[in-house]
Image (cartoon, rainbow, N blue to C red; front, side, top):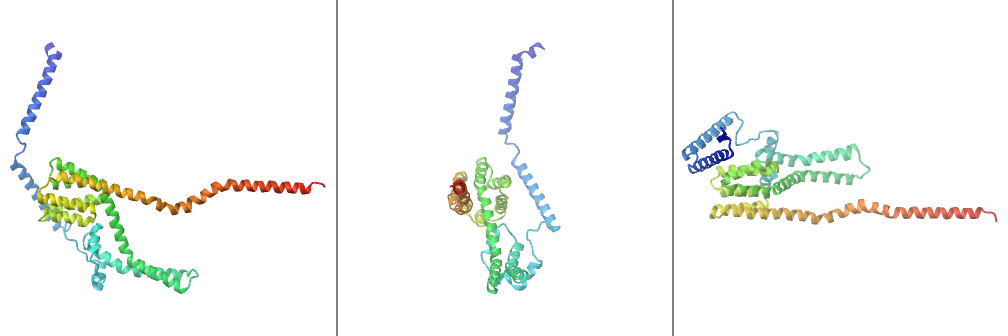
Length: 333
């Protein structure tokens, strides 16, 4: 027992265990792990399970790929033929860029573009002619009603453009970080599909919109006949020069066999520069935007602070002179 407890014996036992663990690790890595047949069988089983769940969801009416719209707004749009009356070839692309997919958002847009002018006009007539005339002439009140009608006609377009701008801003703020994560995944040996899925899961806490677009891109890479179509669809949905350049680089890497890692590294640097230039542009425009608030809010306070004590001193001096004059006048001759 004393021989086992001795320090030399304990060190020898620990070293032997470490050598055994090292040899076992090397032999397991040389063995190749699970065989290719077993891995392919596991993938096939998983694919069949997903197909079965998808068919079951579709049969239950819960997972159809095609969404239909047969509500009140759809009937109004069809009866009045608003799609041709208010035809705009860019509306469908703008709806996709705003993250509104399917026939229902498009029908809703046409319905409100038709109904909003009448709603605004009725509200303006009720407020200006019925509730209170504000002492205005009839011509001015009619002008207010016409302005409200025009604002109601262009209101849905303005709302859509603002939604697109907010979505693009959210995507581009997180896009350079997503490219860095994608580069790490690709250089670690992951396929581009698995890397996109992983990045979409990780980037969701920063930008839900970008996570949605990446998830849609991974689905299109799996189902579309050509990868080029999936990358072009991503560029069209985002409509941003940074995303378009990345999509073009990935298409060229797929077509000509150039290393994808170097292309992603270059695109990540360019998108970081774009984000920095956008921040510098906002910072450069800040002085001009602060001019009017400074004139309205800061200059009056500054005048009060500077001229206030001087005015008080002048008033005190005048009061003192008046008192001295009054005392002099009241003194006996």
